[in-house]
Length: 294
Image (cartoon, rainbow, N blue to C red; front, side):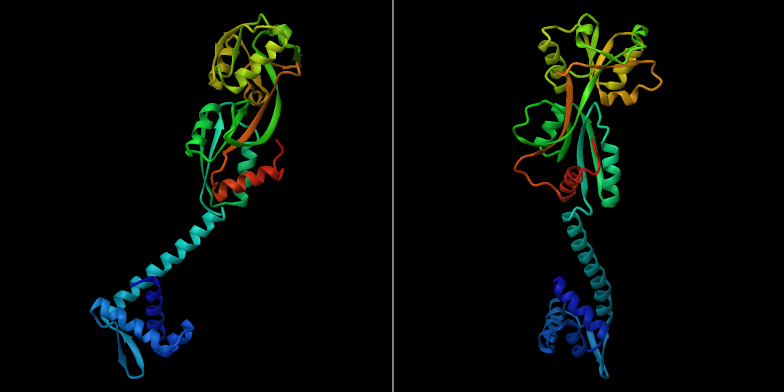
């Protein structure tokens, strides 16, 4: 038996006449009668018996009718859900986010949830280079990463460009709002990234452009720990503007670095030449619409 035959059987059982069932199904009576006979032959039992002018379900027919209703309902639900997943109405958004976070993400997710309330989320935080690996291996569909990185295999959607800040617990900087890299060349610095990653490279290249070598005493990509170390006076740090939202109550002073060479960027990446789920496509469309300004 197949789902089509079960629908035929349901119509016959509910209409109790072959003619009425055939009319409901928009087909002629002989093929419908043949389908009923084929089902009974396959099952080896009588499903309906005639009582006067009407057909009545046998005990076997009643059992099949219950299961037929369940199976056709499940099939309809499956078809509906598959279509919804294909349209991005349901499904899962698998998204990576770099360890320095992304200030625009909460607003993006709120708006996305309003548009697609039945989509679920898998959000993974990691270093930008690791996120690239996860997108490449298809563990993640999308990732928000720090630039620059080698991204020849990825499509990149620019999100935002931001300045960097010098953060310190030293009271001598408390009254100031800006500083230049030249003032920091001898200052013991911690970087919120490790060698080979975008933020680390950006900071190092900014010093190099000024023909200076920074006094790096530590690299720490764990931002909460980095802020604890700065707050305790272990050292100062250079961080993207994104990190400033975490400074409240830490006693840390933040000074904008004025050098034009030192800016950071974030981008949304996906793997070139590979199919994206409808949920991922809709997320990209939301960003491209400018609904949330980075």
